[in-house]
Length: 102
Image (cartoon, rainbow, N blue to C red; front, side, top):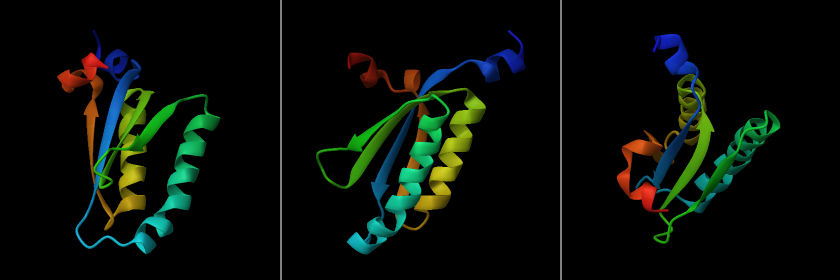
């Protein structure tokens, strides 16, 4: 399989985020509109994002589909928006075995 073909294959991606220490409600309110815009842009291209907070109220997870390039672009844009407020990590769905139980 060529590198180009591999990069163009759509896969599921998981973006996990957690609050940095000393994050305030004001910080979250400040980034919320830009995150909403990012997700709206993704949806307007016919793509899905399924996201929500986890039970600890300090972390969240977003699951989305895209090529490797698209996934990394979405992740980098997310990191720019959330810089200083959230720590974020990107994983390919298959790299997290517990997700296969869902």
